[in-house]
Length: 285
Image 1 (cartoon, helix red, strand yellow):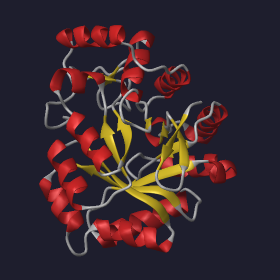
Image 2 (cartoon, helix red, strand yellow; image 1 turned 135 degrees about the vertical axis):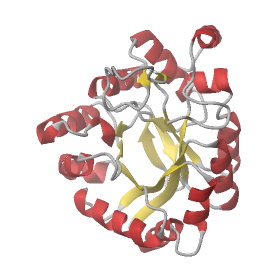
Image 3 (cartoon, helix red, strand yellow; image 1 turned 180 degrees about the horizontal axis):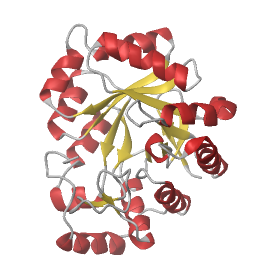
């Protein structure tokens, strides 16, 4: 498994990570199996959040034996310091660890979100204090809005941004290139979301119940989508919330080579017949 440098401590992350949403509702045996499968194939980046059902409890037990060998990321959806501190302490307890490698503000979507976390008594205080106390090694945020991403990158110091980096969003909607550039300018690491997204669900008959968007499921397209994302300025990507799709994303990462001009042209042509999951300013989910 290829690894890329993350942060100033020379941490090396696998170019694909396992997201906790894939573990939600699969039981402890299923969680242990998927975590071990990922780790045995070279994955050392694991990400989870309080909003992913029982994923924290399951992942905590599954990761216990390998905690010292992995990079563990978690998030808080709360916007004030009191509740985000409670989130942090509860997540540490559930995940059976005394620190997180990365702790993030979750789902920063609006100017109101920005104002709340940045104000006195905002959740950003929790992240900064936790880093000083050694409970957190790095701090970051996840974001689906160009405007809010700029506000956070321009006004605060973060170690990483968890951000949609998707072939159709970039080539079709023009969403993301300026944030990738700004992250590089501010020396903020990029972790990618939505790399294997196809389009929005058009009806209620969803084949993948834990995916908020219709994911790619064709191997050729998954391989190309992963190639596209990993050819950008990103450290790693998180596949969609499905065990089988995670394994397909992992296989694509194991075989990764930089995307060719012919493959890029193929994807550009593909965008003529595919609707992205967002506009030039925001992702819709």
